[in-house]
Image 1 (tube, rainbow, N blue to C red):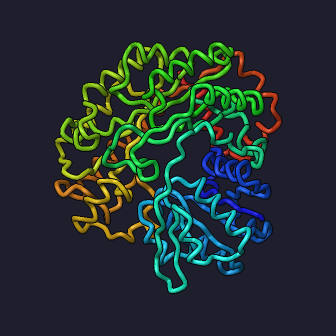
Image 2: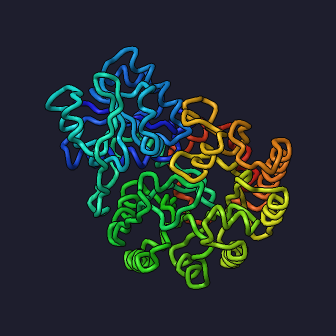
Length: 479
């Protein structure tokens, strides 16, 4: 049976970030189900599906991709009647949206076991019989009368070490991913990607992470994490890792063991990391641990410079003072620090925006990104927007909901700031963040990077992305 997994990021932009979720899903159904003929498609999707002629198509999307995914599935339906299956946070939060979509079925919650069980069933039966589908936990589908059926919730996978290494071998690694390019604050290197845990111990009002992970946190063992790193290094030449965990450092004892094992293997001399961090977890001890594994880039969800707004957004789990101290301390230890900020939250006033702007001006922030408060299904912001009649449940069925860095006048959540004032402050902060980034972020070079200039695929990449070359030259030459 031929299985196509669609990777939408490649449809929207260039293929630069490994589709780790799809590669992990492919590996799971290959190892535990014996399915070998799997293709991950990220560009020229319609023609690729026509040429590959799969028996099943799966796609995993977040909310802002739902409209695009539905459009693509409609195009696929024009030339084939194979099952089209959607998974991911959006359908998990709003399974009823399957009804008016072009999809035949949705996977609700964590997807590996549910998808595999369906594949095994479909391989034998070649049908979508409602009575049999009801026996598979974690599904939403339309019965023969068009009625939505949601089956029993699927239990989460308890042992994350049981998940096999992502099926990177079915991707065009040499052509698209393991190609030298800018890494962190370095001039050149090869990036690798890790997700060593699932879930977050916190419950921020804007975050949809817990829609799939159900407000639990599970961790791969330190041994498994280091083994995956070794595969990336030895097989793909990776020297820089971007870690997608919500907060890798939250499990301190595991983090210490990962560091110990990396040092024991001699890997700390070869690699660097970029991590997500949280202000209340940062202290001198943690900074020293981060230095031991050559972390050079830390991203903080600082969100607001207003104590009142931060308490609302993060449920009182962190303070503005902790954020300021964490940024300063990380800067002292030589980490590049990026801050994420949110504007336009419910109850926010001009005074709050002024305090956020003041935090944004901090000399200890190397870069920043400004987001608009966005109602994602499954979050408290979503519930607030629905309750107050600001949006309807079909909000993401429209095609203009994709950019959370721009103000969408149909979903302004603050009743205390006019649209014009919010736009003004958003533009002001965005410009400040842009200037900060251009001033602080100079690329550096060390002797270990020389080898990457001998990769022929580097020059193919430079030609394909030649319009970006002047930008990188400016960063290299900046004093």
